[in-house]
Amino acid sequence: MASLVHSIRTLACRNNPLLRSLAIRTISSSSALQQRSCNQRILLAQPQPLLSNFEQSGRWQLECTRSYSAKEPLTHQLIKERVLLVLKLYDKVNPEKLTLESHFINDLGLDSLDHVEVIMAMEDEFGFEIPDGDAEKLFRPADIVQYIADKEDIYE
Image 1 (cartoon, rainbow, N blue to C red):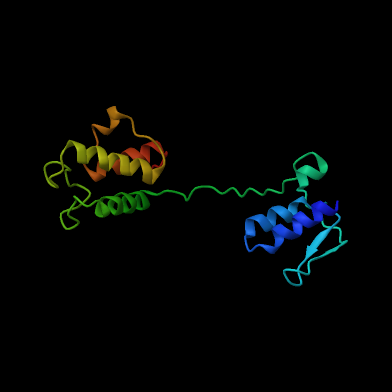
Image 2: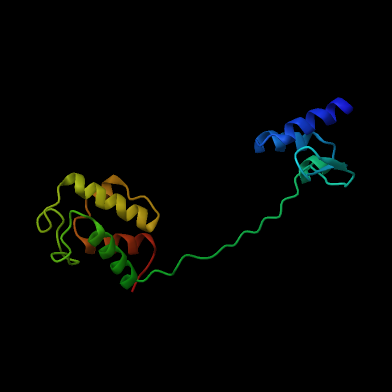
């Protein structure tokens, strides 16, 4: 026991926090290390549990709370605003030329790869996947708004 205490004191005197924390963990749970100066470390008997809840009881004691909420109710106006915002933030779209009736390829000058990126941005914005067959038909923001409204069962 004396050699253990001597080893712990030697390790604790060093300025390495990792070694110091390892040395403290090796002390039994009924003892704690109190530091006065590097050469005058004193072991005091103070019960301090070093074990987690799992190690003490053998089972997990979790306190979790889950909060659920519904999505914001979508309206045609909100869908239009979100679609136009996503398109305005897309670097290859000129916001001055953008309207609900603008054709991506003819009016805005996007190519097929840009069209795919726009569809992917809409999928990210609204949280569902648009199948490739449907995406090929969505060439105007108004088409995207109508498609999302149909998928989310919004009829106004």
